[in-house]
Image 1 (cartoon, rainbow, N blue to C red):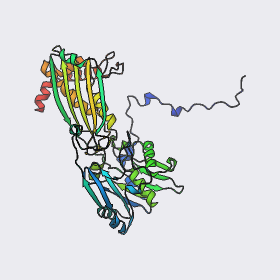
Image 2 (cartoon, rainbow, N blue to C red; image 1 turned 60 degrees about the vertical axis):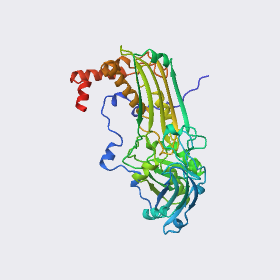
Image 3 (cartoon, rainbow, N blue to C red; image 1 turned 135 degrees about the horizontal axis):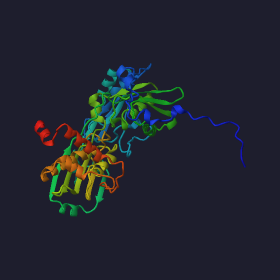
Image 4 (cartoon, one colour; image 1 turned 180 degrees about the horizontal axis):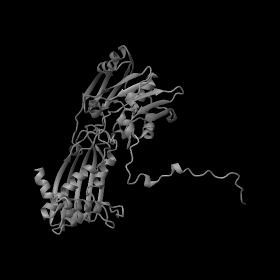
Length: 446
């Protein structure tokens, strides 16, 4: 049976159609470019509200200790102080985390790194808030601490968490690595250490929150993932998620750091406790203590090649220091194992990575996401192998780079999206055109 259509369907909106020709190969202004350079962009720190309070966080001075007592009586008696909160005042679950909820909002019975939040204050004036924090007395019982990921895996090492210090062991296997190393004419083995790195965005972590007339708690913060943050705030506040709104403010730099919860939960707790707008922001010093960093790693690699300039095998292990809590440490250091060979073809490959708890500051997402650490190792290995067999390092890379039809370290067959060969060829042409040579570059650098 046919049904007669009474009205014609609406015409498609041509203004919503994405036209690649309008952006591909064109210089496209950033949406936030003009407002930022002209000073018109509104950051969270620019917002002022009537009756606004100022939040401040008391941070642990111990890397690993039991919290025996917290005395906030002096702080509560100070003029202008509207709230002093500890873990006992959290209405919901005192836990958050992206990959796994293992991090305390406020330390309860134990602190696991120097800089862990222990108490919160809201006051009418920022100086009052700072004085209130100074007056909170915390009695710690120091515990043995561990600051090296390899030492943290040894029997008898101090346990950062009750279940142990190993977060995740990732294994990557392809072919027979012993056979591949035996087929090599040259084997290079080295240990590499990469250091932690702070994102240091120009805008430290900060935000403001308030309560709407209908009971909706609103947070205005430079957050990279507002919907995920909203769920975590709801769990800690024991508040319906439809009574929480997070607005992503103009971001003064993130680079992965603001992918995690920063100050959102802390502000929300103070707003809910006082019923007033609350601004809270970390100083640069506080941000470097409390927020996530790039993972420090220890990487050992053995790589084999023939005199003809062909890679035969790679065997490696990477230890990633995720600090006191996971954040995204599972996935970051997992990728270090997956990409330990870089964009090169190895017939035989074996890599392991270990994400490990320590009492260091927390490591988390940062641009490169575990691949940067791996690149330090695999590119250094490639350079040394090329030198050992007497081959130009760029030619050596071209001879061994992944191409369509070859398999990566995980066994994935590469397709037409594999562009490393074209990239190296472009670099080779540029160097030839400008009469550049690696040997000359080294002499200049020396």
